[in-house]
Image 1 (cartoon, protein in one colour):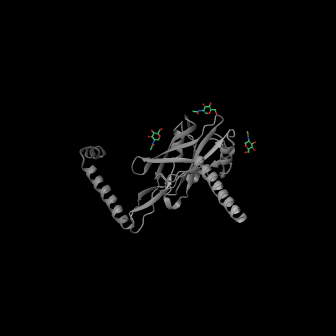
Image 2 (cartoon, helix red, strand yellow):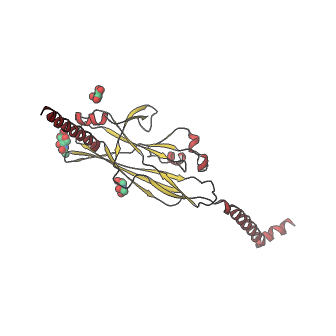
Image 3 (spheres, helix red, strand yellow):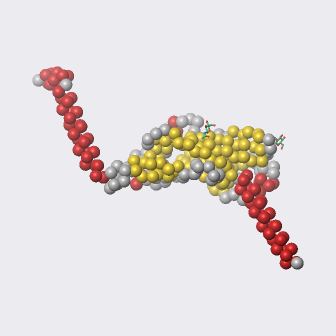
Length: 254
Ligand SMILES: *[C@@H]1O[C@H](CO)[C@@H](O)[C@H](O)[C@H]1NC(C)=O
Ligand SMILES: *[C@@H]1O[C@H](CO)[C@@H](O)[C@H](O)[C@H]1NC(C)=O
Ligand SMILES: *[C@@H]1O[C@H](CO)[C@@H](O)[C@H](O)[C@H]1NC(C)=O
């Protein structure tokens, strides 16, 4: 009998632990919605985040996205700087952001985005939303023997939060404290480092990795392209030479 009670108690405890952890999972989950705009080598990635937490008046958190850009893409630092409102911070060696480098000579890079956040009170919840844009460009691919396209994956960004104050709710604070911590600059305009909590992401929506189909030059076309270019250049020169104003010039020279 005693064993049986112990067994029931054990099962009950398991359920309790399980319930608490899934409850934390729920509060520490952000839903990420990414959409791709524009065509060709230049794409605009719009990332919309929604974080729903318990209504908490002391709640004073900001969100940040870490975009993991594969070596097949680049982010143009001049372009970022030209947009006044952007709160985008490149991480690492500026040489890795070289816009001229082809994919096979590049490395993957990280870009931090500090979006503006909207807070909205809903019944007993607080809804935090943000929408941010990142412009990415495909790098030129090394020509291959046969392949005309390669798949290029832009993985999900890492979503982090940093809170000025602790939550009023001890429960929420306990859930937050369980999350993994990473160090990144406190804000877009400072080099000072802060602890950021990694938030979970809703895996149910279809917006996990974005896969692009990037065109690749094919080696056997190289000669064709080269010959074509030379032929067109020569023809154009010939045609230009036949134009009347060229004759005038020739006459002047004479
Ligand atoms: C949120 O909580 C605060 C105090 O904790 C309360 O004054 C406010 O009415 C709540 N908001 C909603 C929408 O429940
Ligand atoms: C993302 O947010 C922006 C601004 O709130 C909105 O205009 C856009 O429709 C949203 N996109 C998606 C896919 O929800
Ligand atoms: C927030 O909570 C942590 C432990 O959870 C505690 O060490 C810290 O002092 C608290 N900070 C404030 C500002 O209450």
